[in-house]
Image (cartoon, rainbow, N blue to C red; front, side, top):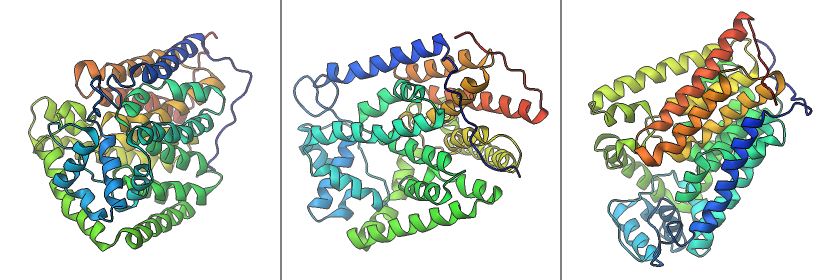
Length: 402
Protein backbone atom coordinates (compact mmCIF):
# COMPACT_ATOMS: atom_id res chain seq x y z
CA UNK A 1 0.00 0.00 0.00
CA UNK A 2 1.21 3.50 -0.83
CA UNK A 3 1.86 5.95 1.97
CA UNK A 4 -1.06 8.20 2.83
CA UNK A 5 -0.14 11.78 1.91
CA UNK A 6 -1.84 14.97 0.84
CA UNK A 7 -0.21 16.47 -2.24
CA UNK A 8 0.71 20.16 -1.84
CA UNK A 9 -1.33 22.77 -3.70
CA UNK A 10 0.65 25.45 -5.54
CA UNK A 11 -0.20 28.99 -4.42
CA UNK A 12 0.25 30.57 -7.84
CA UNK A 13 -2.50 28.67 -9.67
CA UNK A 14 -5.38 30.99 -10.50
CA UNK A 15 -8.89 29.98 -9.55
CA UNK A 16 -11.08 29.74 -12.69
CA UNK A 17 -13.14 32.94 -12.97
CA UNK A 18 -16.44 31.12 -13.30
CA UNK A 19 -15.81 29.13 -10.14
CA UNK A 20 -14.68 32.18 -8.19
CA UNK A 21 -17.58 34.37 -9.32
CA UNK A 22 -20.24 31.80 -8.52
CA UNK A 23 -18.75 31.06 -5.10
CA UNK A 24 -18.42 34.77 -4.31
CA UNK A 25 -22.05 35.44 -5.31
CA UNK A 26 -23.40 32.59 -3.18
CA UNK A 27 -21.27 33.59 -0.20
CA UNK A 28 -22.59 37.18 -0.38
CA UNK A 29 -26.18 35.90 -0.59
CA UNK A 30 -25.63 33.74 2.48
CA UNK A 31 -24.05 36.61 4.41
CA UNK A 32 -26.91 38.98 3.57
CA UNK A 33 -29.81 36.57 3.99
CA UNK A 34 -29.90 36.11 7.75
CA UNK A 35 -29.68 39.76 8.88
CA UNK A 36 -32.35 40.56 6.30
CA UNK A 37 -34.73 37.82 7.42
CA UNK A 38 -34.20 37.92 11.18
CA UNK A 39 -37.68 38.19 12.69
CA UNK A 40 -39.29 37.43 9.36
CA UNK A 41 -38.87 33.65 9.18
CA UNK A 42 -35.46 33.14 10.78
CA UNK A 43 -35.61 32.44 14.54
CA UNK A 44 -38.79 34.55 14.89
CA UNK A 45 -41.73 35.08 12.56
CA UNK A 46 -43.30 38.44 11.69
CA UNK A 47 -45.56 38.23 14.77
CA UNK A 48 -42.59 37.94 17.11
CA UNK A 49 -43.22 34.26 17.84
CA UNK A 50 -40.50 31.65 17.70
CA UNK A 51 -40.35 30.05 14.27
CA UNK A 52 -40.82 26.25 14.64
CA UNK A 53 -37.62 24.62 13.46
CA UNK A 54 -35.04 22.01 14.43
CA UNK A 55 -33.01 24.08 16.88
CA UNK A 56 -35.90 24.26 19.33
CA UNK A 57 -35.38 20.59 20.29
CA UNK A 58 -31.71 21.25 21.10
CA UNK A 59 -32.44 24.22 23.34
CA UNK A 60 -35.38 22.42 24.99
CA UNK A 61 -33.29 19.31 25.69
CA UNK A 62 -30.65 21.52 27.26
CA UNK A 63 -33.30 23.23 29.37
CA UNK A 64 -34.42 19.86 30.73
CA UNK A 65 -30.81 19.03 31.61
CA UNK A 66 -30.41 22.31 33.50
CA UNK A 67 -33.69 21.61 35.30
CA UNK A 68 -32.34 18.24 36.45
CA UNK A 69 -34.33 15.97 34.11
CA UNK A 70 -31.99 14.90 31.28
CA UNK A 71 -33.85 11.64 30.59
CA UNK A 72 -37.01 13.60 29.78
CA UNK A 73 -35.35 15.02 26.67
CA UNK A 74 -36.32 11.91 24.67
CA UNK A 75 -39.99 12.05 25.71
CA UNK A 76 -41.87 13.53 22.78
CA UNK A 77 -44.79 14.88 24.83
CA UNK A 78 -42.60 16.58 27.43
CA UNK A 79 -40.29 17.95 24.74
CA UNK A 80 -43.16 19.46 22.80
CA UNK A 81 -44.56 21.23 25.87
CA UNK A 82 -41.18 22.82 26.51
CA UNK A 83 -40.85 23.75 22.84
CA UNK A 84 -44.28 25.39 22.74
CA UNK A 85 -43.42 27.48 25.77
CA UNK A 86 -40.15 28.56 24.15
CA UNK A 87 -41.74 29.43 20.80
CA UNK A 88 -44.92 30.94 22.22
CA UNK A 89 -47.03 28.89 19.84
CA UNK A 90 -47.89 25.33 18.89
CA UNK A 91 -47.09 23.59 15.62
CA UNK A 92 -48.03 20.32 13.88
CA UNK A 93 -45.83 17.26 14.41
CA UNK A 94 -42.73 16.95 16.60
CA UNK A 95 -39.13 18.09 16.70
CA UNK A 96 -37.97 14.99 18.53
CA UNK A 97 -34.66 14.70 20.37
CA UNK A 98 -32.92 11.51 19.25
CA UNK A 99 -29.22 12.08 19.84
CA UNK A 100 -27.11 9.91 22.17
CA UNK A 101 -26.62 11.38 25.68
CA UNK A 102 -23.16 12.93 24.99
CA UNK A 103 -24.77 15.61 22.83
CA UNK A 104 -26.65 16.82 25.89
CA UNK A 105 -23.42 18.59 26.87
CA UNK A 106 -23.81 20.86 23.85
CA UNK A 107 -27.56 21.29 24.42
CA UNK A 108 -27.09 22.23 28.08
CA UNK A 109 -24.43 24.79 27.22
CA UNK A 110 -26.68 26.40 24.62
CA UNK A 111 -29.67 26.43 26.99
CA UNK A 112 -27.73 28.70 29.36
CA UNK A 113 -28.22 31.44 26.77
CA UNK A 114 -31.44 33.14 25.65
CA UNK A 115 -33.05 31.24 22.82
CA UNK A 116 -32.26 33.68 19.99
CA UNK A 117 -28.68 34.21 21.17
CA UNK A 118 -28.16 30.45 21.42
CA UNK A 119 -29.64 29.89 17.95
CA UNK A 120 -27.49 32.48 16.19
CA UNK A 121 -24.46 31.71 18.35
CA UNK A 122 -24.59 28.00 17.57
CA UNK A 123 -24.62 28.74 13.84
CA UNK A 124 -21.69 31.16 14.16
CA UNK A 125 -19.52 29.06 16.50
CA UNK A 126 -19.99 25.78 14.63
CA UNK A 127 -19.29 27.57 11.34
CA UNK A 128 -15.72 28.43 12.41
CA UNK A 129 -14.27 24.87 12.56
CA UNK A 130 -16.08 24.10 9.32
CA UNK A 131 -14.29 27.05 7.68
CA UNK A 132 -10.90 25.93 9.00
CA UNK A 133 -11.54 22.36 7.88
CA UNK A 134 -12.43 23.45 4.34
CA UNK A 135 -9.36 25.70 4.19
CA UNK A 136 -7.24 22.65 5.01
CA UNK A 137 -9.07 20.40 2.55
CA UNK A 138 -8.64 22.80 -0.39
CA UNK A 139 -5.14 23.74 0.74
CA UNK A 140 -5.57 27.40 -0.17
CA UNK A 141 -7.47 30.47 1.12
CA UNK A 142 -10.04 29.84 -1.63
CA UNK A 143 -11.26 27.01 0.60
CA UNK A 144 -12.81 29.64 2.89
CA UNK A 145 -14.85 31.09 0.04
CA UNK A 146 -15.84 27.63 -1.17
CA UNK A 147 -16.98 26.74 2.34
CA UNK A 148 -19.09 29.89 2.72
CA UNK A 149 -20.70 29.41 -0.70
CA UNK A 150 -21.72 25.77 -0.38
CA UNK A 151 -25.51 25.81 -0.94
CA UNK A 152 -26.39 23.78 2.17
CA UNK A 153 -24.95 26.53 4.40
CA UNK A 154 -28.25 28.39 3.99
CA UNK A 155 -30.36 25.41 5.06
CA UNK A 156 -28.14 24.49 7.98
CA UNK A 157 -28.20 27.98 9.52
CA UNK A 158 -31.89 28.50 8.73
CA UNK A 159 -32.96 25.52 10.84
CA UNK A 160 -30.16 25.74 13.44
CA UNK A 161 -28.82 22.27 12.75
CA UNK A 162 -25.42 20.68 13.37
CA UNK A 163 -24.29 20.03 9.81
CA UNK A 164 -21.24 22.26 10.30
CA UNK A 165 -20.12 20.17 13.27
CA UNK A 166 -20.66 16.87 11.45
CA UNK A 167 -18.73 18.09 8.41
CA UNK A 168 -15.95 19.48 10.62
CA UNK A 169 -15.44 16.17 12.40
CA UNK A 170 -15.50 14.04 9.25
CA UNK A 171 -13.30 16.49 7.37
CA UNK A 172 -10.97 16.80 10.35
CA UNK A 173 -10.61 13.03 10.49
CA UNK A 174 -9.69 12.85 6.82
CA UNK A 175 -7.27 15.79 6.92
CA UNK A 176 -5.46 14.61 10.06
CA UNK A 177 -5.36 10.90 9.22
CA UNK A 178 -2.15 10.93 7.10
CA UNK A 179 -0.02 12.88 9.60
CA UNK A 180 -1.76 12.91 13.00
CA UNK A 181 -3.64 9.61 13.36
CA UNK A 182 -4.38 10.01 17.07
CA UNK A 183 -6.03 13.41 16.55
CA UNK A 184 -7.88 11.96 13.56
CA UNK A 185 -9.21 9.21 15.82
CA UNK A 186 -10.37 11.77 18.38
CA UNK A 187 -12.35 13.61 15.69
CA UNK A 188 -13.88 10.33 14.59
CA UNK A 189 -14.72 9.37 18.18
CA UNK A 190 -16.49 12.70 18.71
CA UNK A 191 -18.60 11.88 15.65
CA UNK A 192 -20.30 9.21 17.78
CA UNK A 193 -22.97 11.81 18.54
CA UNK A 194 -24.22 10.88 15.04
CA UNK A 195 -23.25 7.21 14.77
CA UNK A 196 -24.97 6.68 11.41
CA UNK A 197 -22.19 8.68 9.76
CA UNK A 198 -19.42 6.55 11.16
CA UNK A 199 -20.53 3.21 9.73
CA UNK A 200 -17.92 3.05 6.95
CA UNK A 201 -14.94 4.26 8.93
CA UNK A 202 -14.16 0.99 10.79
CA UNK A 203 -14.17 -0.94 7.49
CA UNK A 204 -11.90 1.58 5.80
CA UNK A 205 -9.51 1.89 8.74
CA UNK A 206 -9.11 -1.88 8.93
CA UNK A 207 -8.61 -2.10 5.16
CA UNK A 208 -5.95 0.63 5.31
CA UNK A 209 -4.44 -0.79 8.53
CA UNK A 210 -4.82 2.54 10.31
CA UNK A 211 -4.78 1.00 13.78
CA UNK A 212 -3.87 4.13 15.73
CA UNK A 213 -6.85 5.96 14.28
CA UNK A 214 -9.09 2.98 15.01
CA UNK A 215 -7.98 2.66 18.64
CA UNK A 216 -8.01 6.40 19.29
CA UNK A 217 -11.55 6.68 17.93
CA UNK A 218 -12.74 3.77 20.06
CA UNK A 219 -11.21 5.17 23.24
CA UNK A 220 -12.70 8.61 22.55
CA UNK A 221 -16.19 7.24 21.89
CA UNK A 222 -16.15 5.04 25.01
CA UNK A 223 -14.78 7.85 27.17
CA UNK A 224 -17.44 10.25 25.87
CA UNK A 225 -20.17 7.73 26.60
CA UNK A 226 -18.76 7.15 30.10
CA UNK A 227 -18.57 10.84 30.94
CA UNK A 228 -22.15 11.35 29.74
CA UNK A 229 -23.27 8.41 31.88
CA UNK A 230 -21.66 10.01 34.94
CA UNK A 231 -23.16 13.40 34.12
CA UNK A 232 -26.68 12.43 33.06
CA UNK A 233 -27.23 9.07 34.72
CA UNK A 234 -28.22 5.61 33.56
CA UNK A 235 -31.74 6.85 32.93
CA UNK A 236 -30.59 9.00 30.02
CA UNK A 237 -29.12 6.00 28.20
CA UNK A 238 -32.20 3.94 29.00
CA UNK A 239 -34.40 6.67 27.56
CA UNK A 240 -32.25 6.89 24.44
CA UNK A 241 -32.54 3.16 23.70
CA UNK A 242 -36.23 3.10 24.68
CA UNK A 243 -37.23 5.87 22.28
CA UNK A 244 -35.00 4.98 19.32
CA UNK A 245 -37.27 2.21 17.91
CA UNK A 246 -40.25 4.58 18.06
CA UNK A 247 -38.25 7.28 16.33
CA UNK A 248 -37.21 4.83 13.61
CA UNK A 249 -40.80 3.67 13.22
CA UNK A 250 -42.05 7.22 12.85
CA UNK A 251 -39.50 8.46 10.33
CA UNK A 252 -38.42 5.38 8.38
CA UNK A 253 -41.68 3.43 8.33
CA UNK A 254 -44.56 5.87 8.78
CA UNK A 255 -42.90 8.77 6.97
CA UNK A 256 -43.92 11.45 9.45
CA UNK A 257 -41.34 13.67 7.81
CA UNK A 258 -42.24 13.86 4.10
CA UNK A 259 -40.07 11.50 2.07
CA UNK A 260 -38.98 14.39 -0.11
CA UNK A 261 -37.15 15.93 2.85
CA UNK A 262 -34.74 13.02 3.17
CA UNK A 263 -31.86 12.76 0.72
CA UNK A 264 -31.20 9.02 0.56
CA UNK A 265 -31.91 6.25 -1.93
CA UNK A 266 -34.36 4.74 0.58
CA UNK A 267 -36.28 8.02 0.72
CA UNK A 268 -36.21 8.37 -3.07
CA UNK A 269 -37.88 4.97 -3.48
CA UNK A 270 -40.53 5.89 -0.89
CA UNK A 271 -41.01 9.33 -2.48
CA UNK A 272 -42.00 7.68 -5.76
CA UNK A 273 -44.42 5.32 -4.02
CA UNK A 274 -42.21 2.30 -3.49
CA UNK A 275 -42.83 0.02 -0.53
CA UNK A 276 -40.69 -0.04 2.58
CA UNK A 277 -39.14 -3.47 1.74
CA UNK A 278 -38.30 -2.21 -1.75
CA UNK A 279 -36.70 0.90 -0.28
CA UNK A 280 -34.61 -1.17 2.12
CA UNK A 281 -33.63 -3.53 -0.68
CA UNK A 282 -32.25 -0.66 -2.77
CA UNK A 283 -30.62 0.96 0.25
CA UNK A 284 -28.87 -2.19 1.43
CA UNK A 285 -27.74 -2.93 -2.12
CA UNK A 286 -26.18 0.51 -2.41
CA UNK A 287 -24.64 0.25 1.07
CA UNK A 288 -22.99 -3.06 0.19
CA UNK A 289 -21.67 -1.73 -3.11
CA UNK A 290 -20.29 1.43 -1.53
CA UNK A 291 -18.65 -0.47 1.33
CA UNK A 292 -16.95 -2.98 -0.98
CA UNK A 293 -15.80 -0.21 -3.32
CA UNK A 294 -14.29 1.81 -0.48
CA UNK A 295 -12.49 -1.19 0.99
CA UNK A 296 -10.88 -1.85 -2.37
CA UNK A 297 -10.15 1.83 -2.93
CA UNK A 298 -8.45 2.32 0.43
CA UNK A 299 -6.28 -0.73 -0.16
CA UNK A 300 -5.23 0.55 -3.58
CA UNK A 301 -2.60 3.05 -4.71
CA UNK A 302 -5.16 5.68 -5.67
CA UNK A 303 -4.04 9.07 -4.38
CA UNK A 304 -5.23 10.00 -0.92
CA UNK A 305 -7.43 12.91 -2.03
CA UNK A 306 -9.68 10.52 -3.94
CA UNK A 307 -9.83 8.05 -1.08
CA UNK A 308 -10.88 10.82 1.31
CA UNK A 309 -13.40 12.31 -1.13
CA UNK A 310 -14.91 8.88 -1.80
CA UNK A 311 -15.27 8.15 1.91
CA UNK A 312 -16.97 11.48 2.58
CA UNK A 313 -19.40 10.87 -0.27
CA UNK A 314 -19.97 7.25 0.68
CA UNK A 315 -20.86 8.33 4.21
CA UNK A 316 -23.89 10.08 2.77
CA UNK A 317 -24.88 7.28 0.42
CA UNK A 318 -25.06 4.50 3.01
CA UNK A 319 -27.46 6.04 5.51
CA UNK A 320 -31.23 5.99 4.87
CA UNK A 321 -31.82 8.76 7.42
CA UNK A 322 -30.32 11.85 5.79
CA UNK A 323 -31.73 15.35 5.75
CA UNK A 324 -30.39 18.17 3.62
CA UNK A 325 -28.49 19.89 6.43
CA UNK A 326 -26.18 16.88 6.78
CA UNK A 327 -25.37 17.02 3.08
CA UNK A 328 -22.90 19.65 4.36
CA UNK A 329 -20.55 16.63 4.40
CA UNK A 330 -20.57 16.71 0.59
CA UNK A 331 -18.60 19.97 0.80
CA UNK A 332 -15.59 17.87 1.90
CA UNK A 333 -15.65 15.79 -1.27
CA UNK A 334 -16.11 18.92 -3.39
CA UNK A 335 -13.18 20.49 -1.55
CA UNK A 336 -10.87 17.60 -2.45
CA UNK A 337 -12.01 17.76 -6.08
CA UNK A 338 -11.23 21.47 -6.13
CA UNK A 339 -7.87 20.87 -4.41
CA UNK A 340 -6.71 18.56 -7.19
CA UNK A 341 -8.30 20.73 -9.87
CA UNK A 342 -6.39 23.80 -8.69
CA UNK A 343 -3.15 21.83 -8.51
CA UNK A 344 -3.38 19.98 -11.82
CA UNK A 345 -6.23 21.51 -13.79
CA UNK A 346 -9.93 20.69 -13.97
CA UNK A 347 -11.31 18.36 -16.59
CA UNK A 348 -13.79 20.03 -18.89
CA UNK A 349 -16.82 18.28 -17.50
CA UNK A 350 -16.02 18.79 -13.80
CA UNK A 351 -17.00 22.41 -13.16
CA UNK A 352 -20.30 22.14 -15.11
CA UNK A 353 -21.08 18.95 -13.18
CA UNK A 354 -20.33 20.66 -9.86
CA UNK A 355 -22.56 23.54 -10.97
CA UNK A 356 -25.38 21.09 -11.62
CA UNK A 357 -24.88 19.51 -8.18
CA UNK A 358 -25.04 22.97 -6.58
CA UNK A 359 -28.23 23.75 -8.51
CA UNK A 360 -29.86 20.54 -7.27
CA UNK A 361 -29.05 21.51 -3.69
CA UNK A 362 -30.44 25.02 -4.17
CA UNK A 363 -33.62 23.80 -5.88
CA UNK A 364 -34.65 21.54 -3.01
CA UNK A 365 -36.93 24.12 -1.31
CA UNK A 366 -38.74 24.64 -4.61
CA UNK A 367 -39.41 21.01 -5.47
CA UNK A 368 -39.43 19.24 -2.08
CA UNK A 369 -37.80 16.14 -3.59
CA UNK A 370 -34.58 14.26 -2.72
CA UNK A 371 -32.48 16.47 -5.02
CA UNK A 372 -29.59 16.25 -2.56
CA UNK A 373 -29.28 12.57 -3.40
CA UNK A 374 -28.84 13.52 -7.05
CA UNK A 375 -26.13 16.02 -6.10
CA UNK A 376 -24.33 13.34 -4.09
CA UNK A 377 -24.46 10.93 -7.04
CA UNK A 378 -22.95 13.56 -9.33
CA UNK A 379 -20.02 14.15 -6.99
CA UNK A 380 -19.60 10.38 -6.53
CA UNK A 381 -19.46 9.96 -10.32
CA UNK A 382 -16.77 12.65 -10.63
CA UNK A 383 -14.67 10.92 -7.99
CA UNK A 384 -15.19 7.50 -9.58
CA UNK A 385 -14.13 8.88 -12.94
CA UNK A 386 -10.95 10.34 -11.49
CA UNK A 387 -10.14 7.13 -9.60
CA UNK A 388 -10.67 4.95 -12.65
CA UNK A 389 -8.46 7.02 -14.92
CA UNK A 390 -5.80 7.38 -12.23
CA UNK A 391 -5.58 3.61 -11.87
CA UNK A 392 -5.19 3.21 -15.64
CA UNK A 393 -2.61 6.02 -15.67
CA UNK A 394 -4.45 7.66 -18.52
CA UNK A 395 -4.76 11.09 -17.00
CA UNK A 396 -5.78 13.69 -19.55
CA UNK A 397 -6.12 16.95 -17.66
CA UNK A 398 -7.35 19.96 -19.57
CA UNK A 399 -6.61 23.15 -17.61
CA UNK A 400 -9.43 25.66 -17.76
CA UNK A 401 -8.69 29.33 -18.41
CA UNK A 402 -8.45 31.44 -15.26
